[in-house]
Image 1 (tube, rainbow, N blue to C red):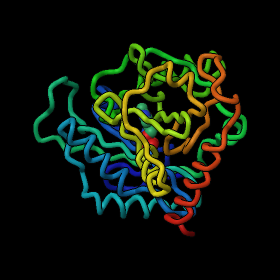
Image 2: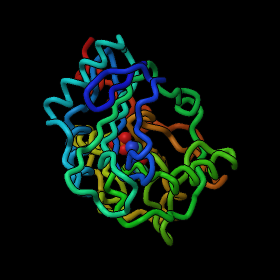
Image 3: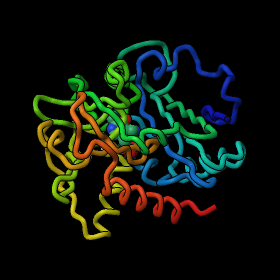
Image 4: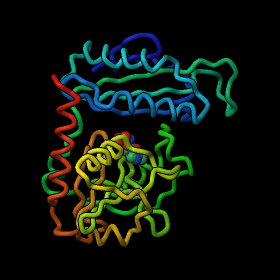
Length: 282
Ligand code: PMP
């Protein structure tokens, strides 16, 4: 496992972050997490594009070009000798005496961490996951992948304490997304996922799955999903870079569909694995 701060590679446990770093003190930054399969960073371009969009949305310019960041991503993978793992990327406004106002002439900080291995969701992919609803108390710009994750952390912790693996964030009667994942449902063969407006993160896994489904002549409606629709769905999935596709078999203790991972889940997982295999050849 190795890291990179601004202009050099460092061991992950080296203390390098300045005390008055704005990400640290103010949460003034954005991030990305991507998966490395067979030594290849999956959907690197998509993650760099979203990193830039998130940064620009809070008036931060990327400290290096996306081409240079892509080179760095590959360099770290080679240096750390990662076959399968993750890459965390963070860009903050920079280092300056603490002040809510944006400091003038500040240089953004870049911070990367490469890790061997990824979280293991195999148990929940085999048995299905339990999710619990939590009121979505986040702000109105959830399309920005900001490092301010407190509401997400509190929600996931609450779901975990009830025995679940993920929180399903709800606004009034609407199911929006997970604390770190997007939502899909299937009813009578019809796929639906909430529209990617400013109220959710436009997940890269979500986008890839929509494309894969479309390639197989399956349409996905991007529109609001009520909690009732989730409860009455035949199958429910949560998707993210590290979870990929997670089958949901209960919501707030109420069984979904047959109460076990279904045929659509198996099909979707197979298609996703094919995509990963195509794009990440050893
Ligand atoms: N929604 C939220 C709130 C998330 O934090 C994540 C994970 N980054 C996602 C959705 C899934 O996004 P992706 O598929 O790009 O990992």
